[in-house]
Image 1 (cartoon, rainbow over the protein chains, first blue to last red):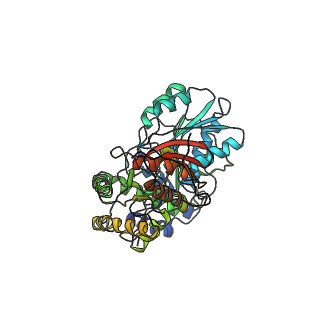
Image 2 (image 1 turned 90 degrees about the vertical axis):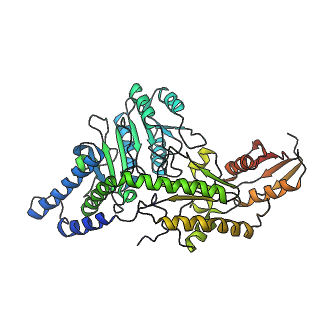
Image 3 (image 1 turned 60 degrees about the horizontal axis):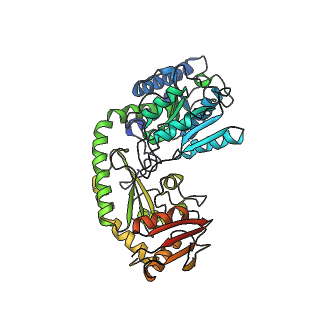
Length: 382
Length: 73
């Protein structure tokens, strides 16, 4: 049971009921290695093929463009580094936004440590990458690939994917899109060469990454491969989890229009109420062109870790981009790139079936929580 | 830059340097320039953000872990 105050689906969504059923069936029926030649293996192969076909259909791509891998992070690494590998002779520079997921930034650092280069394109105060600056970076020559997150996982701002994709097309640079927060929720504009996602973010089980490589894209495996997943991701796939992930994706996509409208209204309420009832707060990210379910704000003079703990005590699970909540004690690179307050930061990402009364309870307790924490640190009357 | 006073918050973790800056700025007369020394990595983004949110003048960071702020009113 996720708990009614679970507001952190951007970190991990609870298992969708349809996925739970599919997982039980696949564990009973799809436990064999799908690469073998006997009856049990053929049954497993059928389940894998069906999961791939269903996923492709939901995403509007070809089944042979879909590969499953170990998790969303691995999908990011494979997506970015595979495009760079495919263009080694053309150029070794990766152009990416400043607000990519850390998995993409880690791939960029890994690439740079091996003789490549990475160029980070800045974002505005709302967290949107500057398409002109991105286009200019593409024109510098020696660019192997570009990476752009479809919508920020920390502040929700939708990125100008279509504009950047068009610029990539003009310059012949392949585009990688991290769609982890969008899949099953909202469409991603076309024009990318490689796209990745993570089942755990859409209501599938953890341990399933999604890598989509468009036909004709010059993607070359950057790591050792075998005969699995068309040579894109090595090792036996986590078949029962993949079956469950595909079932969940189809289910959430079918419900997405209704969920989008409901969540958008709730997040609008959170944005307006927090700004009105909490003094010295900054609600960040684009207020309109954003993910439907996600909202981030920063509270002046409050420790983000204390805020997360206090909200947890009251039954709310939220995440924070404040430095005190990270293992490195560095503030979120996304908040830094936007130039917004990094301490006292809270991110809510609401499940599709979120209990509206819990959102209202959160809004009711928040001003008191903030006032209490400010009083504790002597930050009163400032 | 004429700095009127220095507030040393080195070794303190955010939000403490920002709280101390806010407390000090409430006490100094308008026009006063306070130099905040803060080596928490969050200070580089949080000090300018505080100035923006509270309508104070952020004058820049002349050196590492050093931030100049002028009280406006």
